Amino acid sequence: MDLKRSEAKITIGKLLEVAYSQNKGLTTKIMAKVGNAKLTVDQNGNAILSGSAGVLTFSGKPVLEKIGVKIKRVSVNFSNEGGMKVGYSATYSLEIISVTVKGEFDLEALITSCSGLLCQAARALKGRHQVYEMELQKIMGE
Amino acid sequence: MKYILILTALFLVACATISKDEPLYSAYSKYKAEANKENIGTLSSTYFSAELLKGKNTSNSEIQKQLLFKDDMAVTHNHFERINGTQGCLTVNGYDSEKVPLVFNIEYLRVNKKWIIKAIDVQLVNSEHEFKDIAICPYEYVN
Image (cartoon, rainbow over all chains, first blue to last red):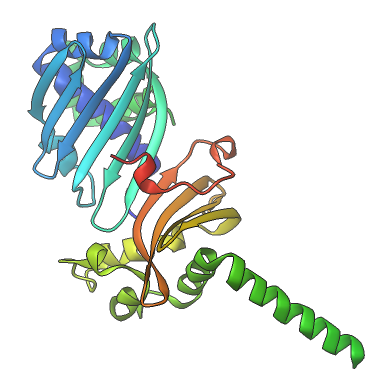
């Protein structure tokens, strides 16, 4: 199986980052609201982030394309019991098997990790990419 | 000689008991012992349901890796199963080659007097504390 634990967790962070880059306000509202939220991505990369605060659609294709295995579907359940700690359970449906990872992350840490222009510029530099990946892995739970 | 006969009898009874009381783990053990890179392409229908294999190219290397998911678990810690008629679920707790814990939750179907795999979820758990001591079906939490 080629889907590694760390990759499965980092991918959730990356998908949320894409959602955030598209609509900061709505993504934050959905994720910060106490209760459950859900993220699904189909095999074409069509992503839907939904919760009691609203629904956001975006393309998760660039994120899924970086995974070295064909993904049929990604389904993530988030639970926010208050504060900034968000628990998640993510299932990746592959061709034959599915792979599930669980963890929790600090929403504030994720949002502030790489949302500014300066950070985006830094990521564009080749040498900084690895640093960003490691930071994301730390936030999503190693 | 007498002791050898008694031990042999006990061994045979033990084997029969495993096969009788744990049919799903018995089916999994057979798949684990028999399937490999060389034969999985042709033997896949022996272990997996037609529904699961439908439209899949079993000679594709990525598909074969998934059909050989059992190779991801180097050491089995314990296992639990439950059966309801012609459907059943097997949970296998164990460790990968780097001693990191993982869990297989496998749904089985009874077809032509054989237990075959309908669905597999590999849980990459964070620690042994997430090992369950009951059989869990993938459909109970995968959506």
